[in-house]
Image (cartoon, rainbow, N blue to C red; front, side, top):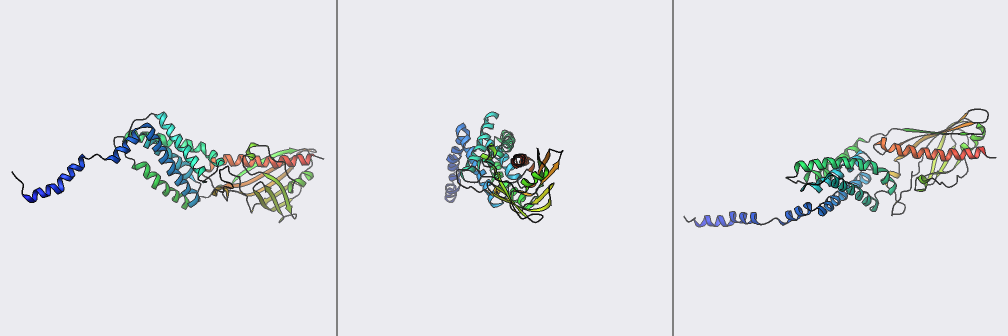
Length: 350
């Protein structure tokens, strides 16, 4: 039976192109499939996509939101591990060991790009590394299981959607919360074979301390150099000069020779970052680790011995605070000991 002329025209215009199109191979899909199926190509694709997306998110968090928070230090490494492993194993079965290697490479490349693009320095990146790798490996485990469940579909949308949409939204939400950081207290002390009156003389001001030999200070952490005071009594201004600038400390309690307490109205940068770029100034160097107050307490132990106790009250806006406090407490304790031991040498000297 012959079709009417208009029916043949309809067949030629509508049905045949669909049949031809269905028989034409999708070259772009084929290339993507070959890339993600091959081991080397899937490693390169997963690591590069994850690291480049991560750098954009670091820039968004630190420069736009001025935020060094939970989303940056926990969410981003978790998503890096999840995304890299999911892309790596979404089309073909991979071993757990090789998946961990991909997650490790993605975090390392993200850190290297952050250093190259002047987003942060090496000191802070090294401090963040243990937390970042722990979260990345947890994300890698979730990505590995997710890929095993959804491998027949091989849909790349979930991890990419998480990187491009969910994490920025969480960053914005965290910035809106404006979490108030807790105030921490660090106390250090030394025993000095001198009278409280002699110790007091060097507490209110002391001459330059020799350059440090400790590795902590030589790698860039700010260290005290000397102290000067303008005036006496409550209202006098004490200047504790660090390698990065002075702490300005108005005196609040003046009780010679037992107690000197002061506030802090100016904080210098807590460190000089290691970076290929001179004088790198990431946002966390300014108003993220803040000393609020300090004091020196002088306690007579016996006729020949005095205990000098130094205290600092401070806060930092790096989250989670319980993780970063281990570093900040240790740094402040070493700063205390540098000052206290210098005063001890001066007071016990001639």
